[in-house]
Image (cartoon, rainbow, N blue to C red; front, side):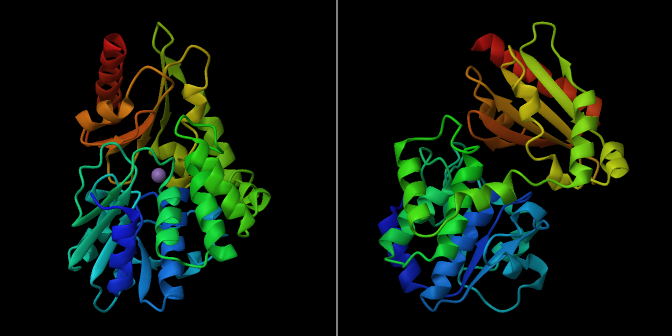
Length: 322
Ligand SMILES: [Mn+2]
């Protein structure tokens, strides 16, 4: 396992960086990758941020987001592939084909299920967001953190902590966030873009999803379903399902909230959120997924009804053991 200092030396020594975000990109992977990319370019390095999936509209305000490259557009040779916020290398999606071409893989992540798949691994499961880790890294690299970089890192932290509400939020999370505000991040502006603005189609999708709400007889597990039909009829995109799961977990008495979403390729994407008792990353691992103890995900190649039954059974088993 490498320290921020070790990585700082690596970044100063090497050149030609591809920075990989994960599929269904969130604020942490995007903010962290953009901050690292902007910083490396400040140091005169060649660095490109790569994506497999489209950039969600709510993150288009992020400085540098316009330059994120679809992996298919990337040409030329790059020596180093940096994965940010990826619990395992498959999280980069189709960009894995591009990742296979780099000489060195650097893994910067905070997921408990991360097995250390890189040649260089900076995994800190205590970090509330990879954005905190990138901040430490930039400090070690003695990068002058610009307002643009600060905005990216602040967004990574505020989104991954649910606005500093999740258990992962610690004293240093606030300290780093305060420092980023001092360096030019604007909390109200980030919040307005990331939390207080949604498309009409996503509001309609939320309504459809809430109509599907069901609970187990003991009231401890609640789930929502987003069918392909619901997505098509509302015109919402897959990315706009983000956050809907929280309505399931928020119901009084519910310990685990689940969201089942039919993907375009006939699979079922499952999001899991737990309140206190269940480590949902272990449930997700059982289905080849992963994540954090309180927030995890997995994908099943099964029809919706079967996937739902399998996952609910596993969650009830985990609850019984807790
Ligand atoms: Mn994260």
